[in-house]
Every structure is written in structure tokens, then in C-alpha cells.
Image: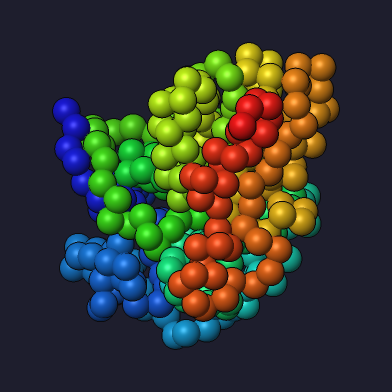
Length: 327
């Protein structure tokens, strides 16, 4: 039996279930305890688990990320919440130089089962330092797994899988999606890490994206259907390890690919997807791959520039018509 709940509630349910199942799991971060989380993701968790397992930290991302890494190396399973991944840049030394490398540096003697999570990407008029996406930065580092959620069902299943995983995992959420509602089963379930989801089947063009850009892609697919263009929509869900097979098999069917990525175009996820498709499905392509990215600049504050900066359904539709050779 399913219920309709918000994404923030789905993440919380996943964390609570894992904390009840395994006493080594704990949550730490800015405002996660007394304030119930900056986005109310951890609402009520302090009351159930107490201050030793739901821990408010100082505003020191490098410091508490390091504490989390040390705890993971010593047998615990921390969940480290960043108020935003923009602030986590300060903690990249711990994430990239310690968490990601613990297993290889110790010749397999120590693992680092830790989940770093928080919102990524633009969330309205928050300007340059609060609107960035870091999926490509993190996925570039061997030893890290990077996951991304768009709906409550996946959010709960992915956070549970991430907590149980023995590798360090970065979970990329969206500030704009915490209130996004969807069906979530009442019973136990997991969403596998490393498997993309086909959200819509189609025959004319493949649209690949992740996180909140999936909403723009789905709107574009609906509009294209009205014009007789059938789009297959793929949600990556996991950025690393990426499910190339699902993408390639779709392109073999549709012969065209559009990759929609909120991050900057240079050296991004869209570039990686494009490379893999030309490597494994070049002979199936009837048109060059087109990437729809954010503008190659820092995000300005003004609302009119925010709209111009980000991918949107019109930009996606225009790209589809370009690879379809229609006006």
C-alpha cells in the first residue's frame, strides 16, 4: 500500500528506518537537531534518537565532515547533512582526499561508509555562491559514488541503499523539490545504486537528465507528444557509477540524444554521457548529440537572468527539433 508524501518526508523515513535497524547510523549537520533541519528533513528525529545520534554541528563544514570520516573509519555509519552543497566546497578536502581514498590508501583495511547529503543547484534568486551544481566535480573522483533524487519514492529507496553501502556516497537533492509529493510504499524497499530509470518510453529521441531538470524534460516531452514527437525520458538517478547501458540501448532505438544538465557545459555530466554514447552507439546516431546546459557563467541574481541561465522546456524542444531536422 502506498501513501502520497513529500520528498523531505521520504528522506526522513529512510533515515529513521535505517537508524532503527542499525545503531551505528547517526545524523549530523547544521541545524539537524533542535531546529529539525534547515529544510525540515530531520523533523522529530532528535526526539526519537536523542542528541548522541542526531547532532547539531557548528557552521564548520570541513570540521564536521572530518569528524564524520573518522567515525566511518572506526565502524560507524554517519549521515552528514550540508545545508547546501555550495557550502560543502569547504569540506571537499575531507570528501575527496580522505573519504574517497580511505579504502585504497589502506590497501582495503579500512572502508568509509558515510553519506554526505544536501541540496544542490539553483533555487531561485540565490545568486552566484548559492546556486551551483557539483555532481561533475564529485563524480570525477574515483572512490565516490554520486546519487541524485527527483521523486519521493527514489529519495527514500536511494538514501536507504546509500546508508547500507560500504563506500562514501554523495546524495544530491534539490531545495525546490523538498515539498514535491509522490507515492511511497509503506513497506521495506530499496532503490539500487547504479541503475537509471526510464520515466517515459519513446521512439523518436532520447532525453537524458537528472535531479530537478527532470521536471523540465518531462514538460518538454509532453509538449513534443502534442506535435507527434515521441521522446524517451531517462532519469540517471546515479551519476557515478553511471548506467551507460540503459542510455545506449535507448539511443539504439531512437537514434537521437539530448542531454539536459543544470551544470555548466565544460567538462560536465552531459559531456560524459555524450562521449560514452558516441563510443558505444555512434553508428546508430542520425544526428549529433546536443547538450542543453546552464549558461557558461556564474548565475546572476536578477530573475530575468535566472530564467535565461537555466535549461527550460523551450530550449529542450528546440534542441529536439534540431536533431529531428524539423522546424
